[in-house]
Length: 100
Picture 1 (cartoon, rainbow, N blue to C red):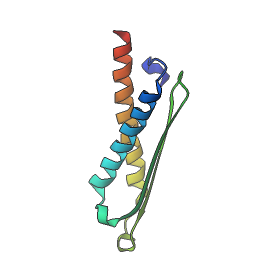
Picture 2 (tube, rainbow, N blue to C red; picture 1 turned 90 degrees about the horizontal axis):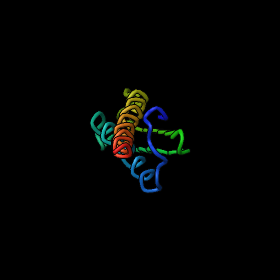
Picture 3 (spheres, helix red, strand yellow; picture 1 turned 90 degrees about the vertical axis):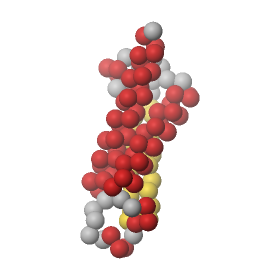
């Protein structure tokens, strides 16, 4: 994400980008899977470094036994991609404001 030209992030901005990423992933998961079938959902977003900013997102989903025919991995993978998109949009916003 170095090419975005963002300034070093404050602690508050790091917390916000993680929150935004986690929220986007959760929203995607529950748009594809019913909450009542999700036994376990763990979303972890971590930011390392300031120049460049490295963002790591993990989405782990376990479904209840009534959904054994459903593979949660594609939902998990796409949820992570959606989280990256949301985080990138936030970081672009920061980059634009830092140029003003």
